[in-house]
Length: 192
Image 1 (cartoon, rainbow, N blue to C red):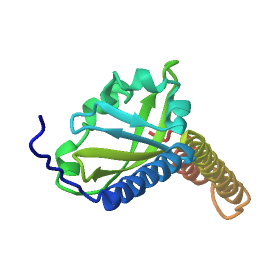
Image 2 (cartoon, rainbow, N blue to C red):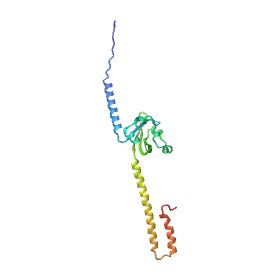
Image 3 (cartoon, helix red, strand yellow):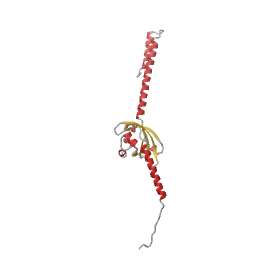
Image 4 (cartoon, rainbow, N blue to C red):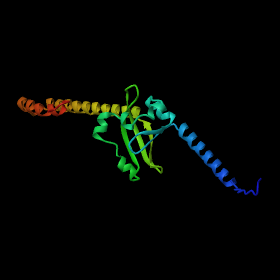
């Protein structure tokens, strides 16, 4: 026989509304994260991958499930990592970090990447990265072209000065030859 019954009722409307807003917010975040044209990846404070968007997977050639078993140090060029280690303590202190690194893709190709790194509130690190290999190559080509132009200018200046000396009628042959010998080395590509 039942001698009594008690019941407790809670209005869970606000809880359900909060849950729905959170779900919508997560969906919006995930959509932005996945649709970003820049590569985005998230690691913990020792460099283990926690998440990465499709752009980062395309850039590196790794699938997301492969990345989640890896550490960031496995895709950064080893030589550069020895010279310039990852400054986790700097990021953990709340500082934002902008850096350029060479990353090794899955197929072994090295690419130049610039990244903007900052700490997320939940003890994770978010990096937004961009492949700048083409830009770096263009800069190197421009620098080489500038170098070649400077070398041609040195050569032409030397030829012009030598021509001026050879046309000087008031100097002796010994004097002209002595001056030419002092003018030539600075016009060479390797004057030393």
